[in-house]
Image (tube, rainbow, N blue to C red; front, side, top):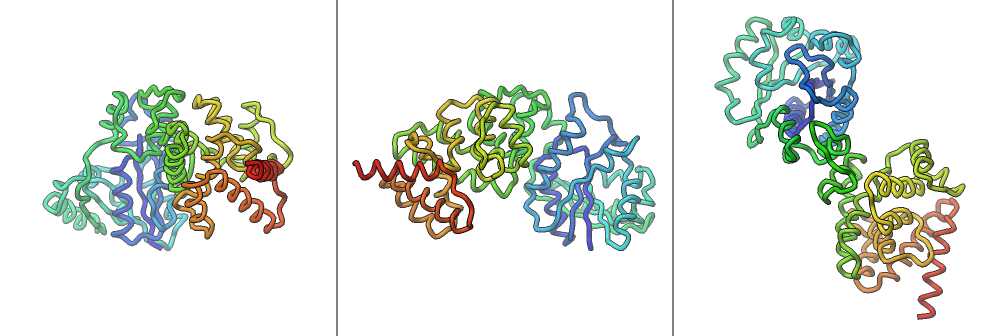
Length: 400
């Protein structure tokens, strides 16, 4: 197995780190990638106002999830767990003990590669792993790499691969931290990492979470979920916005509800229950044990208490899994947008997309019926609120 090892302070991880990791993984045909945030880096001191070890580890976890690689990507805390400076030779000795038969490749940027001979125990590093150096600008090409590559090959017998990442916007973590403190910097970051920074008020950011712009709210929301969920959330937002324009609801409110409707989707059962208890949300017996139902309640609690959402938005999130009798316009919009958004590939999705253009209540009714049929088909109990919502719509459509 061929394993890539990419270390750094990741303070914060940025798009340059991500592009380098993806390019190296593809060029080397890696089978696994290990991301290792430094504990105490030997070549520099951590800047004042840096993120904590835990926060850097969590941001690196977000980076790992957002790389989109088809190979396993793991984040290791071994350098943070070790006392003293994070010497690469020590890390490689630990990894060699874990992977005695595998081919290790150490990934590094131009500056690190050009000063490699000055590192602690460079001969040990070269013996334990190949070196993959990547340049982040067009200037970091063959003319710069070749002399050092030849020198290291002669002196240490190093195996070396070099590559240049074209069209990469050049920015260091230092520059990005400075930009963040001045209200910018998001262009250099994956949205989820920007959202994490905003929600934790890192690097001099002072975001008021109750007064976020839509782009900020979107980023913070995406920092709370896994990458595979984001397309659904974005699809729900755009569908809800389109429905709001069609049926006369507040488009901004519809977007906010959609952005946050699944923000606790990946909470554990205990985290869901603790969140509901914290925010005084009463649960019935079915909700207490059913994650697909429970996340709507915990998300509603966070939407109100953390993000200052309106009663209308909170209610739409609260009922988006079960529905209820006599739903408000925004509740209907979020309920059916969750079903009809473009990534839904079920056979009934296109039927719902047509109905939301012509008859909103008919679309909601069909969505409720689909839920009832699907749940009954699995032999699971149907939530009473869903039955009440279906029966209420049936009764009032007959009256009309």
